[in-house]
Image (cartoon, rainbow, N blue to C red; front, side):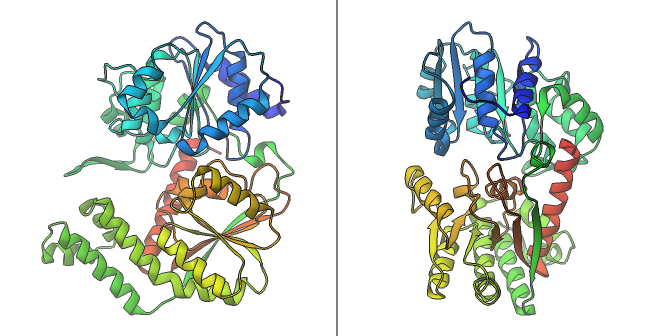
Length: 448
């Protein structure tokens, strides 16, 4: 290893090497974003015993080139082993998977390992494989498995099962998925769409058993000079007509999903109507349409706040949206208000131009970066920004955490602030409450 490791990074490397055994060959490095999980995993690759002399790296498509750059940056050219790098999306293709797994690996590194959270998902079937699968997977041809994720475990304890099962973890010994859920999920029930669960129980036992094969440090644990980060909420008060419109949209969705007017009326009168909506309308396009229409309802109050209260004092900040159409609308409106806007989303940039655009935005003295959450939540440093505003709440708490980790990480020298816009009532109030509940579940699973 040519690059010098920080003390805690050396400890992370050694913890992984100590964790690998013949019966439980897996280790998950769950360090918070920005602490150098990449360099720690490359250090592990250098030290593991070599028999096949091959190391696999599986990453999201947008990070494959970044991994190649990191290997060149941190490792010398005199290596006596090779790296094979592929994206999760590439390995979904059976032919690609077949050729990638023709020879064994001494170590397989799975970046953003929270991608593998469901045995039914194609990416999980290609990388880890389901219990009954017979085909070759990356896991089945690898002597050791190392996962990297700053957002693992997620709030849904069942999403940890595929990784724990495939790595032979004691938490899954003699436990089917159903038994695992009944042991560690607070609520488990059968619905017409399958088994669902939420909440956490027996958390202390879960953390204790997870311990030897999982390591997580926060920035505050190991980097005392990183300035603090503060999360705050900005409530938007709107007319009763807006909340009525929300209910009307939800009623449309439930009716379109085949529910009677009576059932819809009863559902929307319940305090947990959001749960009922998510269960009765699981169709993603319909839910996405609801969220988009809800996002458009917020545009005027969010813009009023930014133009009147933020732009006069702050010329550089990030505005996150969930939908591309909303990002483009905010860019148009803020440009008209005199802001120097840079817009980044999955449709206006590819992975190379996105990296260049974000690097330029990060270095600029004045810049309102408008970005969709999914376009920048992985693999980018945005330490040139100190203020981020969320025009739309992402219902996935880990995605929110990942975007926050873009600005508060190694290299940040100033305090960081994140602001969440949400309606004072209605669905968004429930979502804000749900996000807080999910964050509490995550803390219960990970510990401090």
